[in-house]
Length: 423
Ligand SMILES: C[S@@+](CC[C@H](N)C(=O)[O-])C[C@H]1O[C@@H](n2cnc3c(N)ncnc32)[C@H](O)[C@@H]1O
Image 1: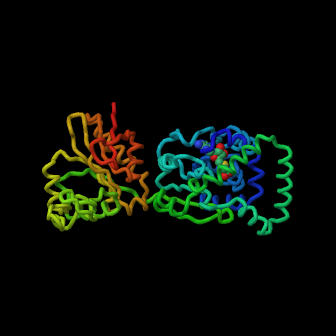
Image 2: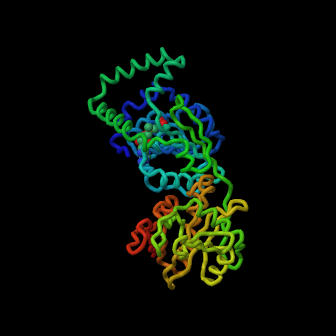
Image 3: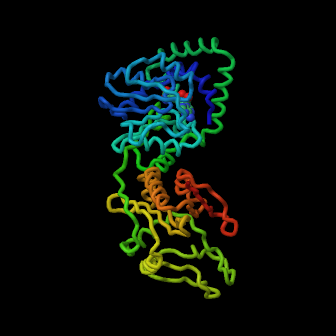
């Protein structure tokens, strides 16, 4: 969202701005949340001028830190400030895949960066990948509606008044010294910040939707969120074998899943054109049932019972897939059937809505990735999926798996057709 050039300019005055605000208190809150132990490996994503590293150094806890940023100017200042073994500053763009193996870091921390990035879903997938299962992700980011002036005034009001005024003097001094370009850049920043912040600054609810279960409190004069995300319990993966399924149980999962999914509602009887809210063309129920149009008595909605479900799957012994359990609960599944010896059609990819919040979709990515890879090893090269365009999490998952989206020309414009071609 902000180009590298902007951060390079911002680097010139970044530390004076940081000194003017209750920034140090925010750093203490972050350090408390990090709960550092000797020997831990930390990843600081978007380290800026190394303020967090400096604060960690003062604790005298021997930890290894990989602090990265894509701005050379920020890194230059950071390196000048801190030259300690174990702290490694590197140039890295967070919007690319991170050059670390899975489960590498004990802590991943990202302070005041995510609001400025375009696609944080991709970044978070990488954060979680490089984080150990027992690890912690700490994010600090501005709240929706937060205001820089509130941070500033709260600093003056909280006893730091005189100090702040002295620091303000430093800032005013630097105003005279810095080149015009810097202020142009800063004004642009403030402009951009104010006009677009409704998109970049997130509410607590938005964060919970993105991360699943997380502990969220405020910091930085109540203007920022301090988010602590601990890995949720392990997920268990099982192969889907149609004969071994308890269909009574499964129809419950289907009912649960489709409650939260967007459906193509039947708003008009296809026969007599009566307009009404008839619901989806078929859905899951306790028993086989059909609802009829009250005007023409034409059949409308089919309810699939457990026995119909069993029937469906046992007639397709070539079905294969994966189910994901968290404890005893089924939380996600993906399955399908071969169309030919090289083509495989995945007819369902699902993550139960209540677990989507608790666990977040990123955990499922790897599981589905392995499913596709295993099928690929068996000779399938082309994969197809259809989704509803509003199924945001599934879309994200497919994008990450490398699927390309296309329109379904002869069908519902609300649906997409996804295809993945593997070597
Ligand atoms: C507001 S500063 C925060 C710096 C530091 N975390 C702190 O709180 O003091 C945002 C930092 O994110 C970095 N940044 C922004 N986009 C980035 C990207 N795509 N990859 C790496 N760093 C990025 C900027 O260069 C800048 O140093």
